[in-house]
Image 1 (tube, one colour):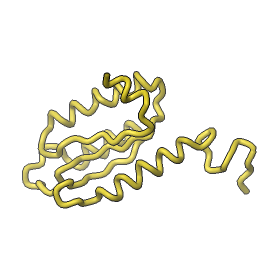
Image 2: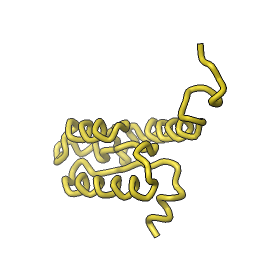
Image 3: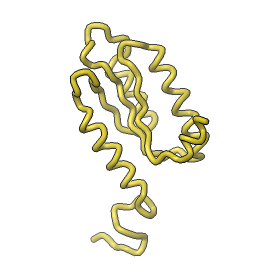
Length: 117
């Protein structure tokens, strides 16, 4: 069933808890499944560390999240669903990525025949 959802999705927000190292490990398997089902590496996605409001209980450093996002060539953000920190920015970014991916050839132009000077 999850494969069907993945196949039909246009973008992914991969969220782990900053206060739970295991969730950070689990998100890697989720990304692997997305790549397997979608059959290509360049899928619109954002890696998100949630619960930044619990800084004192952090188990996953900012650097670990950032490094993983760089490895995956995707944006990285830290958010707090509790106090809505960076949540609007997160959704704006995934929509931007999905719009970019929907353009023919992934170019900035409107079609492959366009020339940008």
